[in-house]
Length: 153
Image (cartoon, rainbow, N blue to C red; front, top):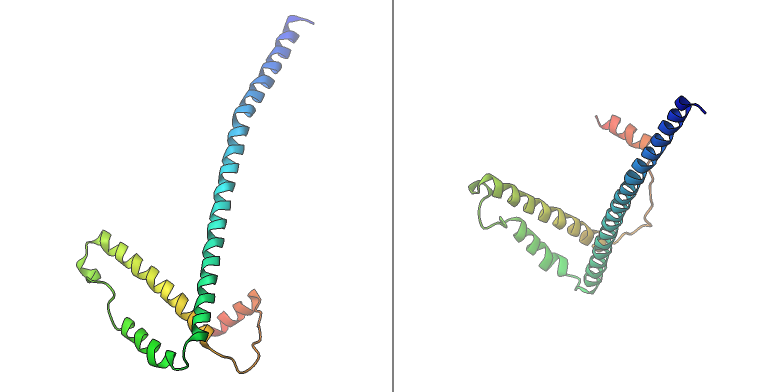
């Protein structure tokens, strides 16, 4: 082998070693990042599942309490209570009197409470509604939804 050929071989070997060293640095870091993100996703999934299970148990408790309630409970006690709650401002101060950063926090709290209230009230009403006929499940495809949306507009 001549000197020029040996230099080319050495240059190629150096490039291969440099590439392997770079790969050995970047691949483990990328693997660690993927594992970390996967663990975060699994944690968020477990958190969502736990919240759903808690809401399911809340619903079951609410349903059993509804079944155990006297027949006139809804009309004599719950309806006046809900009407009273909805007629009041649940905040001790007006949202307009607060500085803008507190106002947004106040609005976020109100929206969160309203969302929770609506969800639980709909569950409560759904559990308290007795059907006279067998309930039927209707499945709509995306094309059905598109046609309904087109008809509505």
